[in-house]
Image (cartoon, rainbow, N blue to C red; front, side, top):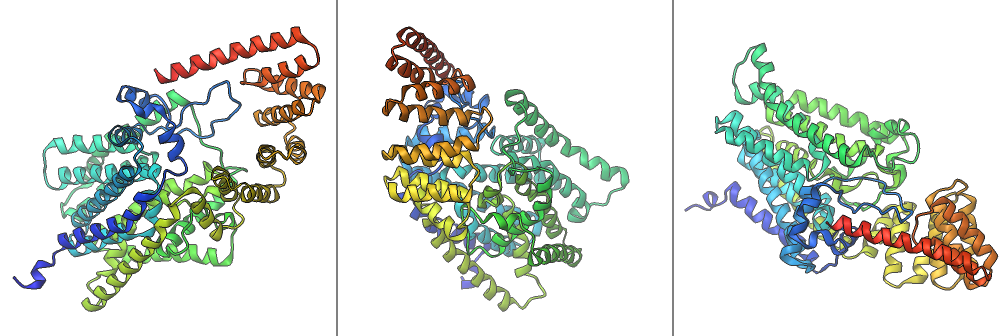
Length: 570
C-alpha cells in the first residue's frame, strides 16, 4: 500500500490527540489548586451518590450560613458539572492523577467532536483534521484542561457539539426523530454544565438561516420561516433553566465591574480584542491580565477593533460560496457574547480569563483551518505553514502547562504579565501563606494595600496576617485603616471589629474590647463568636451575669448553625 494512502485525516487526528495527551500528561503529578480545594476536597456533598438530588437544588458552592458575615457574590447553577465531579469522587476519591486524566479525556473527546463538526460543515476532511489539531494543541486551552475545576468548560463544549451534530443529522440526513430528541437532551445537559450553553439556540438559528445554501435545498419564504420552528425547543430549554435558577436563587448578576455596569458597555470591545489577541497570539497567557488591557482605550486598540471588523466582513464576502465557513463566522460572533458580557458580572481584574473562550475557539479553529487550506494557496505552502503553526502551538502548550503546578506558580506567572493586578497579588499572598512562606506573603498583602489604598478588605486581610505572626501593633494599625474606609455597618466592618476585640483581650484592654464587640454584634447579631468575645470582655470586667447571658446567646447561635449544616446535607 502506498505511503500516501496510509496517511488519512482520521489517522492524523488520532496522532494529534495522542500528542496533545502527552503534552498534558505532565500535569498528573500536580496537586489540587484554587477552587479544587473547596469544591472537591472540602465538599462532602460529592462524597456520596445519595446526595445527587441536592446538586439540582444548590449552587456549585455551598450556601453561606446566616451565622457567618460573608456575602455570597455569585451563584453558578451547574448540576451536571457537579455530577461529573461526583462521578470522579466516587471512582477516584481524592487521588489526583485520575482527576487530571479525566480532564484530558474530555479534551480529547472535544477534539474528536470538532473533527466531526468540520467534516459535516466544511465538507473537507483534511480541513476538518487541521481544525481538530489546532483545537487540540492551542495553548489557550491549558487553563481549562490543567485546572480540574475548569472542566465545566470542557463539558459545555462537548454537550453543545453533540447537540448540534445530532440536530444536523436529523435535519440534513433525514435521521430518526430520536436524534432531534437527543439533541434537545444534549442541549439541556450543556445548559446544566455552564451558562454559556444559552447560545445554543442562536447557533441553530444561524445554521437554519444558512441551511438552504449549506444543503442546497430550495425553499420558499414560508418554508424558510417554518424551518426556524425546530429551534423553539432549544429556546424552551434555556427559558426553563433561567426560570428554575431564578426560583431557587433569585436574580444574581455577580459583583460587577466595581463601577457603573452601563459604563462597562464601552469596555466590551476592549475585552473582545483581549480574547482575540490571546487566541491568535497565545504567547503571554496568564491566569490574570492587566486591568488596563480591557478598560483603557488606545489608538492601537481602536485600530485593532476596526481591523477585526474589516477582516470579518472580508471573510464573509470572500467565502460567499462556502456557507460552512460563513456559519463559523456567525458562531464566533454568537459565542463571544457570554465572555464579553462578563464585564457586567466580574470585577475588572478578572476580565479576560482563558477558560471563557474554550467553546469560542471551536469556530475560530475551523475558520483558521479553512484559511490555511484554501484551494487558492499552493498545496506545499499550505502544508508547510499548517505544520509550522501546529508545531509552535504544541510546543507553547508544553511550556504553558507547568503554570498550573501549584497555586504559587499560577500567580507568580500571572504577575509577570499583570504586575499591578490586585487579584493576582492577593491570591498570590494567600498561596504563599498556605505554604508557610509568611515573609513573602506579608509583602504581597502590603502590595495589595498600596494598590488599593481605599479598600477596607485589603487592610483587613493584611492586618489579619500580621496578627497571625504576632505583630499586634502593626495589625491594629491596619485594622484602624480598614475601619476608616468602612464607615457603614457592613459585615466586613463587623469582622474587623471582632478581630480588634481579640487583640484587645490579649492586651487586657477590656473596655475597648467590649465596645468593639458590641458594635460587631449590632451589625451582625447572629454571627458565630461575636457574643463569646463580648462575654470574655465582660467577664474580665467582673460583669458575670451579663457575660453568662452573652454565652447563652452564643450557645443558641451555635445550635442553629449545627442544624443548618445538617439540613444542607440532607
